[in-house]
Length: 415
Image (cartoon, rainbow, N blue to C red):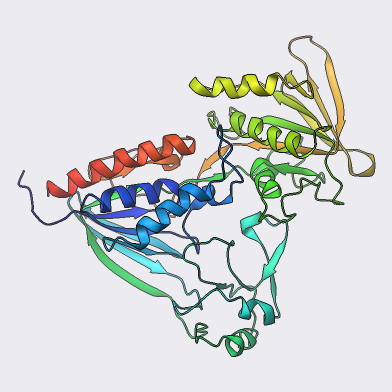
């Protein structure tokens, strides 16, 4: 196979933490990289986290480093609000079509907030999983990259964008912006499409969507975040009451043939981390964790030991049978304690479901790539990484992305 002196041209599908790591590692090795991200910002699920485990530091640190590396590297280009609509060709020579949806805001935006101040329409805030609202002209989150506002055309009807345009002194509002189709050639592809929280509404016994004050673990991340809907106060959604008694229900949809048959890897650690959120904010709060098995591999065992040593935290080994509404907005959890054989029925202020990781995937499958339970498997010329390939935490995602970057560079040079 002949090699080329020309730099590899790599398409990265997904701009989350794995995609960013792949892009900067490949670009800093001399490759030309194009990132395609369907959201209006880069950073993926990590941008929505409050803290990493086990160090309990904010994710913006790692994201900001990668954002800065992208800003200063001419080998990286990115398209947000964009999707890959077709891929054809063979390893070393792929033809790709990308659809870029209109942002209605151009690169002149300075994030001054003038448009949002006068915007007459509101929308559900998907970044906070619908727990609050934003204006139809909005910045996805305070440290979003790119730092440009977006106009939600579904929420902004008729001429409601006119006040935003009139208020912008920089000429950044472009209400005539149209969808754009891009075609490009690449030598290799890295799939970093990430994951979505499993829809707990599908699990009838767990009450999500039907019982107030039952939330998902990702909603809990946003509740605890200072840029979240409550400014970081862990209060229950129905009435804003500070949480005094809280339950975490593990394997909500995971390890279940009727939902996600696999273990989602991070859920146990996520609940332990969120237990710390509660205990640090309210030293008198009581936490119960209902689990099947606590999976804390390797060095994470120390993190489990730390939580188990807390006398305000109770671990109950048993699968939850049902979650029901109780009086005054409280929530009752019924389960079997497998260690004693007793039926357990407890009432809490709020319940957090440790929902599993469902592969986000794409609207179509890539030629030559096999998919196992929705996760992509690497093939010649196409390499899956991070949670597009398997459930994994941020640390493992970064390692996996670096490996994928190396393979993609080598594949491009062998064209």
